[in-house]
Length: 107
Image (cartoon, rainbow, N blue to C red; front, side, top):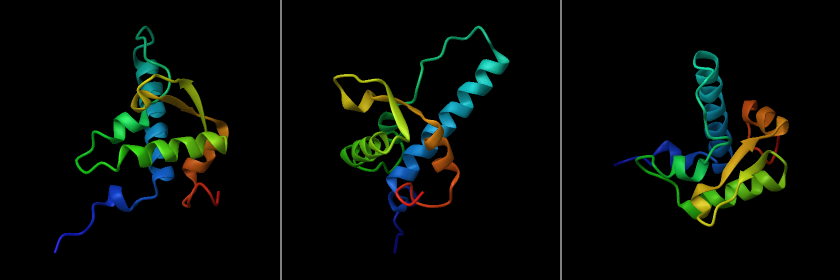
């Protein structure tokens, strides 16, 4: 009997926050090592997480992003017609929520 993939068992708010945090950390490392490289601002978590082997439904990911924007954990950097390319950035609150070992709603 197969178990459900962890990506489908993890709360999506937490998953989106972690994806944004990892992308910001990666971008910071690139900027330190290659200061002349131009990187896009923000993260597209719906597109990124949609490329995983067993992705959550994109509408559920969008709902998680919208919830995190509503509570002030993410801010919109670029909103495109195609919602999958929504680019967001962690706010200070979002950074702290991403560090807590609990659901963002509780944090």
